[in-house]
Image 1 (spheres, rainbow, N blue to C red):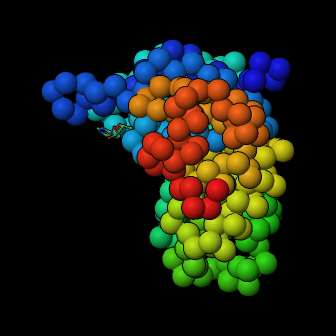
Image 2 (tube, protein in one colour; image 1 turned 90 degrees about the horizontal axis):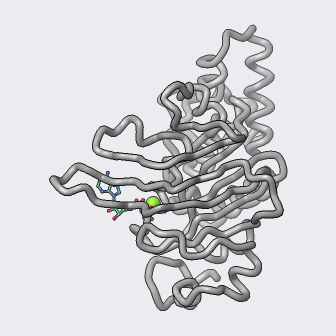
Image 3 (cartoon, protein in one colour; image 1 turned 30 degrees about the horizontal axis):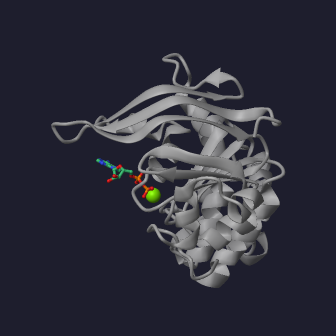
Length: 265
Ligand SMILES: Nc1ncnc2c1ncn2[C@@H]1O[C@H](COP(=O)(O)OP(=O)(O)O)[C@@H](O)[C@H]1O
Ligand SMILES: [Mg+2]
């Protein structure tokens, strides 16, 4: 990865969950670079720390007081854990799409307009243009253009997930974090999201969490393989799948250690 200027630099990151008396380390001394305008997938067995790692990239743990984060993360060379770093600005630069779609209890239009309204006061026409552009980028416009005022909850779950992506795109992020975004979807809706992520990766730095190896292989430029909270291997995706260097990576790809969905690999 060293040939690329990194967009995200993670240095000596440790994360502890402190809800029990004894703090439990979920991520152990993670140092990794994530390149700009590429798609990097974090893979690894269930419970290895994928979601925890993803959440550190937009400081989502800030809202929980039973999590301790140590170490540094730089995005575009800015230290995002610096006490003076503006968190609302960070959340605009780094969007997150969750495993299940959580549209706001509002219309399709207002779901997409929510972020832009939060960040600036725009004339109605400009806002409407942003809504249309974002829905087009998320491949949803044609399906919803005649019912923008309908409740988002009326959409199918696959459409809702594309709506959540449109909502993220509406604030023009640099980085898009996606946590198992197809796992709640039927195969056709999942394929639509995959195609969408593939088309977006030239213009955004995308960090995906996936346990579907076929998906990781099809979409990714880079792979970060996590195991028990540690980075085991970071490599170009094709090299990782053809010729994994670490024994644990080999075992994971072969299905000898748990968590992966090998059926579709
Ligand atoms: N809120 C929490 N409190 C305590 N432990 C947690 C919490 N969230 C996650 N963990 C633990 O941290 C580890 C990593 O979890 P997670 O990042 O969700 O893994 P993954 O996404 O790879 O399945 C697991 O052992 C999990 O049980
Ligand atoms: Mg997870």
